[in-house]
Length: 177
Image 1 (tube, rainbow, N blue to C red):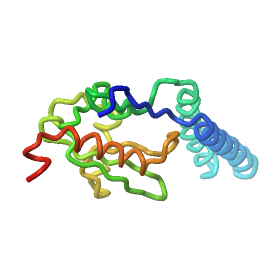
Image 2 (cartoon, helix red, strand yellow):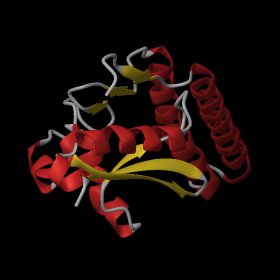
Image 3 (cartoon, rainbow, N blue to C red):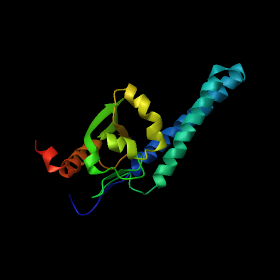
């Protein structure tokens, strides 16, 4: 392993584009809400859809704005392990990463980490990971999922790096059967 840590940040440009898209959908929701209200009144379905659009994409815009100014690395490779802040506040030991793969769902890159049972039990996963595990399992993802969108290094390259670092950390008996 390399003595220095490798850090992967979120791309500010990609985050700005996502923020711009969220703001556009908030504006579209407001327009839909106003037109529906003017034509059909307060109980119109378009008013409801516009309000839901404003609330959902408004929340997405707030998250995007926070991520634009968050300069902490999204992923860190170090001798201790893999620190993916969207997964856990603690590093995942390299020996606990059994496999990593890159999958796409609706053209969005997802990094799936297959972890050892002891890591599954001991790591303090983020609330997002805990809440989405069942839904991800229903989609066929049985590991811990990490979004590869918006990072400054392609997700495929990150998966290759995770595989290399994890393979080097496996005990000799497991690495060469």
